[in-house]
Image (cartoon, rainbow, N blue to C red; front, top):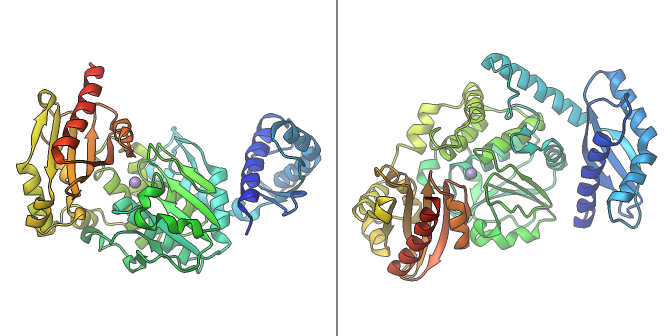
Length: 456
Ligand SMILES: [Mn+2]
């Protein structure tokens, strides 16, 4: 496996060479070209530049010849742009695998767009990694390459896992099984009851494998979100980080962060498609569950046309919307229902009714015989209070420690959560706070009120 330094140089070279080919090399022989990866030798003397070219055989060959012709010019251009003592010799290699995958993806995309009659607007979710948030095709190809190499791999998802974390993790693990890889999904916390219907949940465990080389982190904005298994990540030789959170920092050797995507599942689907793997019924079920739960079953403001189009494609692939909603949304354990009752009893308002909040104390959890996972969905009940612009739920971790969930369709709650060391999305965020309930509540209300005042 390449060292981190090599990986970093590979990334840098890939980025710059792509840019130079796009903007500096003006050779009509060069067709539609994607640099899918760069591999620098251990002594940094040579770099293999894997290139995928769209088009017919003759066009591909002409492009490769033209690139080889241009390599001296590209190399000297690199010398001006990057800080390296020695710019490696460039060796352009045709990447047939990526080309095949691209062709498959193009076919799938064409098929889907025909079926769905989406014509004039280029669909962002259907293409080979293209997206509203930017062009990720090179990153996706690089991740695909790494996954194909078959290193012992572990998938890490965030603690207190939701439908997107679980569905994305299981979908990727199930897809890699088609490459004869057995990849566990590690999570600090257990699978909530409502997600036990998902296929292959026996792959999820809090036991981090003794040995793994590659770690794929999903749906987590930063390392602390992994909970008490975060430190285990250091044992990986290479980390791939895939996430869609607004506040996502990444932190992998390769980061694939599309902050415009409705769910991490959309990114995973692109990776699976790029690998040319099949979206089986089980994989479709996982991805649909992830997408549905992260969009509030297609009612939140992140419910884009793309999200709905992908949902339709997943239903075609075998996902059952009715069964998934019945299991993941409409089933509640009694402790969760009791906890909802307690939260609703505590409901109050501030800032003239613009802030709606509720709290669950350690006593509430004990009386309801409920766990932290039973709080899921309670914040959405608060959102049904008429006149509310911001919703806040305080959930006791202990007497002096609180997890705070924030929602708003009026102000950016991610920024507020960040003020308290948390994060999330503009409309949905969370943080942790220490102190007695009256203390943390007063601090939070003061912050939100000042933001609301500024809005006016
Ligand atoms: Mn998510």
